[in-house]
Image 1 (cartoon, rainbow, N blue to C red):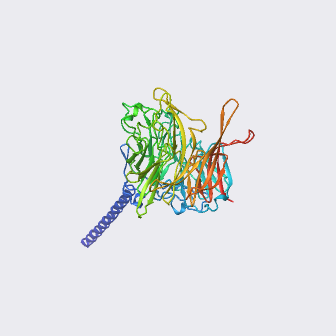
Image 2 (cartoon, one colour; image 1 turned 120 degrees about the horizontal axis):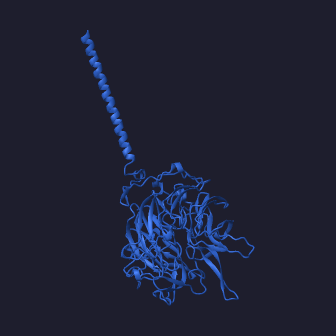
Image 3 (cartoon, rainbow, N blue to C red; image 1 turned 90 degrees about the vertical axis):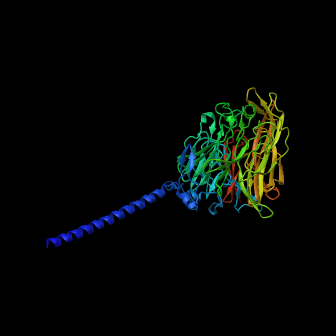
Length: 606
């Protein structure tokens, strides 16, 4: 009996041990599975990359491997009011580019879209009804506004020259909120995934803003030393978890001598942390041990464009310092006055094309001593040739009036053209001056449409360049000009495939307004000015702005309107059947009239 009981106990003990063994196996297996899943969620491939199939995941920054993070910001959801479109925060693979159906009637960045086309698919305003445009409302502001508002649904957002962001209703112009986020002037705003991104000028940071209330979601670290003149004016480029900005060096330094060396920086769109930083000066001319600190410049102050198919960013870089004396940079001044193509995943330069340099696109006797400045953006277009073949090209230009088309993949120059008549452009600054130099410089963004056409405005400018001893210098404007020698100009349409002119409209005054193309209409403008000589011989100048609508096929003027204020040089935007025109200081006709620093003037059909 006892033996039987012992046998049963043994059997039960064995079974219990067996059950415990299997339980332990199950627990171990479950734990292993959880470990594997946790490992996948924190692996080098982020969620955005698993969805998009992007395998370029490791970025090198300051010798550390950095993993791009998802741009999901569910805890900061910001839905535009009365938008009618669901802009819930999405993964970064769904970044807004401006070409989506949901953005057909929107204007998501200063040049409309990530290609910087300044082309809108809106269908409300066309050449048949554009002459019926009337002022619907005016938003008055204490500070000048040079950038067009971005338009998301029924709301608009604009940054003024103090750096403040203003949200308003597009139907009425009523202000919804105002956010003081930095200083200015800056080049404008970008929208993506329910968030507005902005630079802060001399605060030298970038911020992400909630659309609903204007509150800051995150602010980056300071990206450069404002005490040296470093600032960030560029309109951010936002794509797949990256926010790309460039820098500037203190605006127009009157002596032509600065110390800020340019850079382009990529930030994480979720938290603003630096992913990579690219110094845009390179070579012996900026060697920290042998070169003077005033050898600097090559800033990307105007921003550029991005190709979502390749992840390549196209950035134009400004002139070198010293501006008017090349003595210390005779051996070359990379990468000033270049268009550069950057791999967005690692910040490496893919190709770089100099515009004004010896033996290159524009052959000159000495390095740039005129601040020709390859600037005012870039655009990306797919052109279709007569034989049916396609090519992707990048357009850039400079303040000398050179327009260059480059192969987007290689940088090969496909064509270049120089607008207007040039006079004495080979003369260099001297103690007694260079003599007057005239050229049709480009001081604003251009526009491109899907019909192989480039639209551009060039301003005729005259200046006399002087050296002042040492490395400094200055410029003198001739009579009957405004600002830095601006006089008159031309608005032109060019074939994107060849660079040949399709039509050209001369303007009596400086056409310093970035064109906008939509439907069959080209919007442009100019700065009208009048001069009055007083009894003491002093000449006073009164300026205002004229907005134009042209037939985009032949340049024929269809409509014009004097706004009574200078039009912001970044130009207008259009959405919801309304043309939004930013202005600088508003002209007043009497001492009793109210004075305002700037405005948004909204035009709609009557």
